[in-house]
Length: 161
Length: 441
Image (cartoon, rainbow over all chains, first blue to last red; front, top):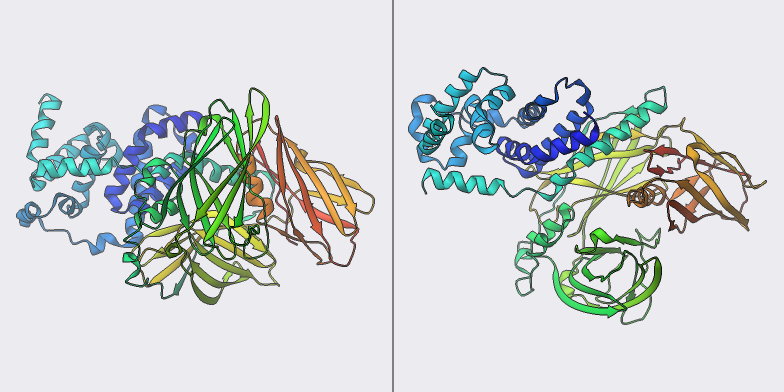
């Protein structure tokens, strides 16, 4: 993939990258920084991408790594108290944005990619390097916790299940 | 609010993509190109990446009444929707610091309309729109005069380098909002902005003159906040002093002094300032150097109430002492070698003054060349020869001739002595533009 193709492909997914970073990091400057860094790293190592078909998930993976690195640096994971599973009703009482932030990391990632970056379940699983079945389970669990029932219905409808 | 509404609201919020996102690929390309270039040209490691977290505590609290001081002034919130400029402007807009004016003038087939002004004690932004009819290209040369004294206001950077700025506007950009940025030592309240416009239409050029009276609201011109830091730090064995930090509504300025005994000189510094709430203010790539002092500018932190700022230097690139060198023998009027295919078409020796005209053939006529020259020739305005004599650039003039870009009229003034040789060092920056960086030795 040459620079021009890279630029065109990034153009297509840049909004998804930014939305994902923003939901991960909850800060516009940091999100922009993460996207910049991910795009730079992507461009630097574009020759390592053997199959252009995987460009989107590959870029998303780089971005997620950047976001996680930033979170680790800022130690937000430690500050953010994860609510134990038995306190599910607490999620219901929180505004949706806060409830998403407080989800366990594995569930939160799936929700961000599936419902805010609008990735398919298959691509979500690829980005997170988890089996599709695991992604589906986490998705269902997260939607239940967040009381996003209407998305469960939509999802079933879309997938023809 | 039910979950469905909340979900839709968040989705809608996420649709507000920042303008900077448009430049992410270009930023990455430039960063990579710079690395590739330097890595490719020389054999020894020249990029020394240094991370440094230097915390300095300053009292940057704004006066609590400040935020309410401009209640009576028409604000510019809508401006940020009209054009795309750096973070600094949007921050200024968000904080309602600006002046709305509507002044319109027509000369020839060109109408210029001034819409908004942002000013502080040292800097002025004038935002304007054009009705250009059929013009293909405009070159705008602005000059500012004090209305009360009729004297030209010197365009200065800390009193050192006065430079003439040109604004090139090409056909595809004419429908946008443009701005003129002007810096001076102390901003008068009543200003006359004169704009000389060289307009090109059907291959013919005509020169148009505009004159606008601008009365700044004195409430907008606030004194800057200056903090003396004087804190020393080291980057790979080279000593620097963070001298001071200044906050303006339109920008911040950080002064770093390099120690006289340093073995290396900074080529570029990638840094940001972070406040105690995690907001980052990035290096806006504008840098000025005078002797050992370098001024670095960032987006403004002025409007954010914070108690501590942190300087984070992400990367330092040092000047390559082994760069290809252009050697000009002024005594015999000869050029001994010309790296990077940069030609010296003309030079003239007068009493203690040399003039150079440097040219390089480039393929694309884009603004990159001008930016590169602006940022690299002018910002490194002081050159030192092998005998430690200092030379200052007084004036840089650029002109465009089809595909040739020419830099001319660079003057190096000596004081009371005459030197046989002057060393200039260059390297080629990409293939469409050159980066005539001159090493301070």
